[in-house]
Image 1 (cartoon, rainbow, N blue to C red):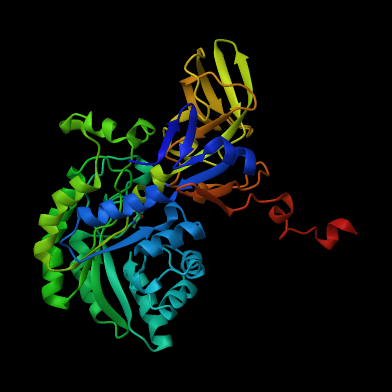
Image 2: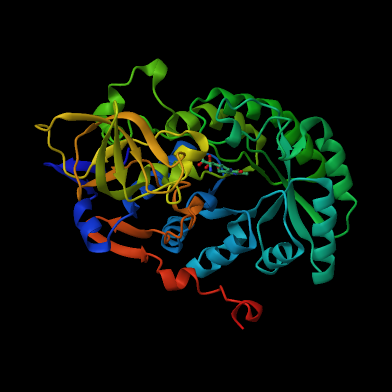
Length: 435
Ligand code: LLP
């Protein structure tokens, strides 16, 4: 469920007309619904009620300060993966004490920054990392709280580039080696063993891999509690969202029309399946959802520049490009494309929807049936709230897009479009080229 819908012929985010936003701030522009994010957070929290739950929003999905603040206000901690992300949480007024620090390549400076800000725990990915954390904690005269990331070797049945819980991924320590890693960790004077962690992949659309991984690792976690007195288990993120029927899935009617056996994953079903497995452990349960929290809460607005009628092929050339939303180019991912002004009288159009970047990979959709739209009209890429802006770049010297947050009838620019001057501000011409 989300808050993007047509009011008459105009696509709205909550009570705000999206074409108005496009006219006001230009395009490409990301627009986010605060109500959708709040619903996502609250539904997940109530889906697992009964557990001692801590939701650490995986901010790599979308790390705009306003969005971090919104989740902090709702009670979330954060799943962080860099010193930059620590600093973003601080800048947004979020709580590092309720946040976890993951990632395979933590530097000494990042470890120090997190320790100085009382990080809840480090999610450790390798034995050498434990030694490094111990070293930094020793220098600061503190004990560093850690959980070891256990790789359960469960197939998440998702895109190869976003699966993480198989033994051939770079992440975590295999379950078979985890006991030895904990024993090694226990011998370090500046390490405090606080928990256990796992994460099997992203955009999981069925419950089975989550259940399988929890069942597989739970006995080991029980042993850890007995041996080291661990107090929490993070079971990671990964809850998938709807890309194909994105717009329709905003309405309760769409959900009730889905047959029970093929109904997409909901936070309620996730909670119902996992709570009985997790409750008996008597541990705090940490979740690290990223995509689920923001994915369906954001769209990317774009303007049609040209309709190029090719030989047996139409190209709809829009002003957003792979630098703004790289997911289709990178993962062949599907994003629904809808007009901001709906007109059912118009003829249909089948086109490749492409951006202006100079490579063929700059393609959002191939042979996509669309309502025909012409130059100057606006479209929206649905389900673009997660891994959209955060993965964007300046390729082809394009400025980073603007971001707008909507709540009810209010909207505000939360990130102004980058200017060319900002883009080149750190560059210089060396003297040996200009003399
Ligand atoms: N926890 C850990 C340790 C992770 O590595 C990730 C995501 C998450 C949590 C959050 O996963 P989520 O709930 O968002 O599925 N750029 C890709 C997704 C990469 C995910 C990386 N790790 C995409 O656009 O599909």
